[in-house]
Every structure is written in C-alpha cells, then in structure tokens.
Image 1 (cartoon, rainbow, N blue to C red):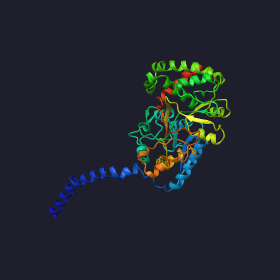
Image 2: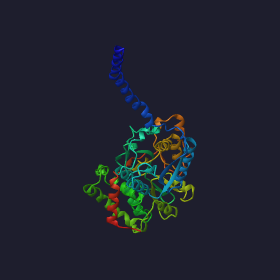
Image 3: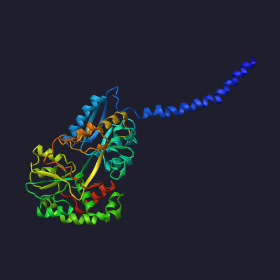
Image 4: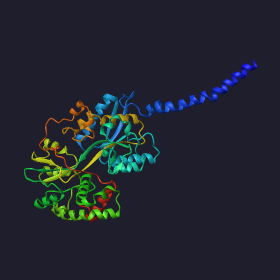
Length: 418
C-alpha cells in the first residue's frame, strides 16, 4: 500500500514537471496567436446583433456631400444594422476641440465623436495630442484596394505618416474654371495668371488665407514660384525656410493684388463666394478643390453654360482626405464596418459620380474585378467638367506646419482685407 502511494506521488511529480509545462506553453501560445487575433480583428462584414449608432463628424457645407453621407447611412443600416449620424461641422477643428476636451475631462471610453473626416493640420493636431485610435487601418479589408505599398499618398497626410490612424477616403486637386464666352485662352501657369489679371483687371481674386481655398492658393503659388527650393516646403517650417520661400511669393502677390477684384482691397472670406461672383459675371476666372462642383453648379444654373474647367499645365496642388477613428470610441467594430463600406468599390464609385459628389476614388482600379471596374464608368462627359484624360503634374501638399506659417506671414504683410 505504501509502495502504491509512493508510485502515485512520483507520477504526479512527473506530470507536473513534464506534461503540465508543455500544456501551459501550448495554451499561452495558441490562443494568443489564433483565438485572440480573431477578437482583435472582428469580422467587419458581420451584421451587428443590436442597433448601433456611429457619430460621423464631417464638414456639412456641401449639399452633395451631405446627400452622399445620407446614402451611406441607408446602405450600412440595411447591411450591418448601423446608423450613421452625420454631425455637420462648419469647421473640423470644432470636433478636434471636442475630443481634446473629453480627454482632458477623463472621458477615455465613451467619446461623442466616433468617426471624423480630417486631413492636414487637423490630423497633425489629433496625432500630436493622442486623440486617434492607433494602428487600425490595416485590419479593414478594403484598405488593401488602395494599394498602399505602391501608393505612399494613402499613408501620408500633408507630409506626416498616418501610422494606421486614418484611412484614405478620397482625393482632390486644384482646378480652375473660366467663362469661355468671354475668355478664349485661359492662363495655363502661375505667370500666365498674372498676365491674365493685367488683361482683365478686377476679374480674378482668391479668398483670404484663413479659408481653405485661400491658403491652398498660397501653397500652389509658393510651390510653383520656388521650383529650385521646392523640397524645402516638404520639411517642417522654420525661420530660414520661410525666408527662402516667401520673397518670390511676396513679389508675385504684390503685383497681383492691385489687379484683382476691387483692387485687392476687399477679398472674399469663403470659397463659395468665388462661385457666386462667377455666376454674376463679376469674375471671369476662379478655382476650386472640388472639380465636380462646377458642372453641378452649371446644371443648377448657378453658373453659365459657357463655364469650362481645366488644370494648370505646370501642376496642380493635390491631396488625399481621410477618415479617423477617435481613441475613445466605444464601438470600434461598428466604426470599422462603416469605414470598410466607405472604401468598397460600390461606395467609391457612387461618390465619384458627378451627379453625386465627383470626389476621386482612392482605390487602385488595377486591383478591382471587371464588375467593380464597370461601376466607375461615366456614361457621358459634361461640357463643363474637367477632362480627366489630360494628365498634369500633381504637387503634394507641403508639410502641415507650413499652413499656419504662410497664413500668419500673409496677414502680417497684407493685413485684414474685407
């Protein structure tokens, strides 16, 4: 009896020293690699079991954009049981400030902003303050369709690496439009624009640089007027860099301003006012960062039928805009499902239609199936629309630090003009 007990004790010790460690090692490695991975990367195609609302904070100043997001809500509600509530913003920085306030108040899990439409300086601010969810984009299946390994614009925002904190949503570039009934040969580069202003004094202007289109014009001019020093604009700004770039810019603007609308003493405050002045015939040439809004305005009779859209031959300022998930979003799975739909061929093709929005797709069409490619085919070309078969160089946005630096330097030199 004693020997049997001894043998049993020896067996228990043996199991503890040999089999138990092996079993424990297996349990620690297998679930972490397989089971836990599934928990961290949920199926974004799966319909939610309970009704979920995703608060999507996005600029609300365009009827086309608003209608498109309403369509997105209809689609994801039917497919996933998710409601997308479009919180319409006049300024994206308002949502950034809200998330920052929540973080300061200790609200780290029940954020009121779930998805946010951002890029440029707003992304830089959110990244700096740790307001965005980290490293989530690669887990969204349709992100692969942007071909990020061969398209660095999908992972860089105004010169700053996105580090998986935001997913590309669309892209745009600066275009010009003119009244072809009164102008036979529009300017094709920055220097010809000055000649145009001399030929047609008072018929061109740009918004104040605290408007996104106004600061975009300054960036475009700074890039094209500083060809020899262009690389400086893609590094963080400093006093020496500003002193290198601004002389050519000030010389150009000093010559342009007296030739502009109301001699440059009054400048419009918002991009929408440019279109209004083109509609009334007070301007003969204007520009936009949304090419599709021009033929749409013609169809609404806000612009005359003789309006034509084109891109400057020496290059267009271009950027990609993104969707971020805030760090304190309570339902990350639902937010990812919405983003995955936004990056689907169906949603990207719908958004690119001129009658809908006209925002260029971020998808690499070479990766799409034949049926998905067919979704992007436009039946006819609008006479006032940009001819996308004519390619021009695209200038990436300067480093985000240049936005405030150029704006501040401009106001210090020229002051308020309204």
